[in-house]
Structure formats: structure tokens, C-alpha cells
Length: 126
Image (tube, rainbow, N blue to C red; front, side, top):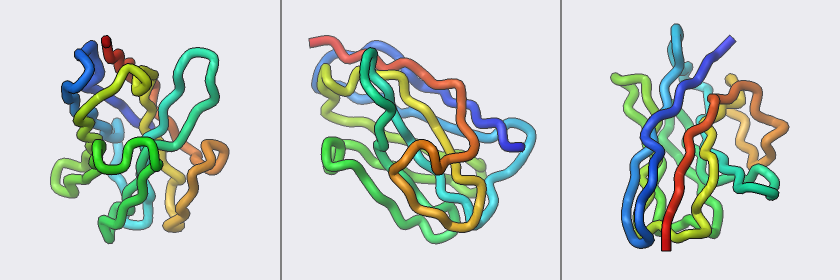
């Protein structure tokens, strides 16, 4: 069982930046894990934002955030980050950290992710 804990959400004006963090509680991220960020706005489905392979550092982004968001990992700190720049009001959502739990599985489908954090709210004002 992997428990993920997110932090770093908040209220920011359009054009501003935030950095989200995600770390497992009581365990470590293994080399074959793919770590991802999803988001869910009110009344909308949960959508993929970005993912990173823990061992290789390869990344993937949704078109809507590419060039503005950067996902990264710090192996020593056992933490995944999502740096969000040039934020827009449409980025407002609850952001979730998730992992497939091993097997180097890449997916943009929430149902393929086995473990989730509790979410952190990001609100971008216009």
C-alpha cells in the first residue's frame, strides 16, 4: 500500500506560479514507478496533467499544460514536484498525485493508477 501526500496548493493570480509536492507516507517510491499529476475541476472529469518515470526521468505532459508546467523528481528526497508557471483561471482544480505502483506503466487514464493522494486545491484568479 502506497499513501501519497500532496502539498503546495493555494490561491494565485493569473500569470503566477505554484509548486506542488508529492511524497509517499511511510514508504519509498520504487524505480519502476510512474508518478503522475491529475486534476479535477468542479463538474468535470479527472484529467491527466503530467507524468514522470521515477528511474529514467522521462516525462509526458497534457497539451494544455505543455510549456507551462514541469514535472520533476528528487530521488534523494523521495518527492515528485509539479512546477506550474503562467497559471490561467482554467487551471483551477484539485490536483492529485498518483502512481501506477510499478511495472513502468505509462497511462493518461485515471483508472490505471492504483494509488492516489488526497488532493490539493489550486485556485487561479483572473
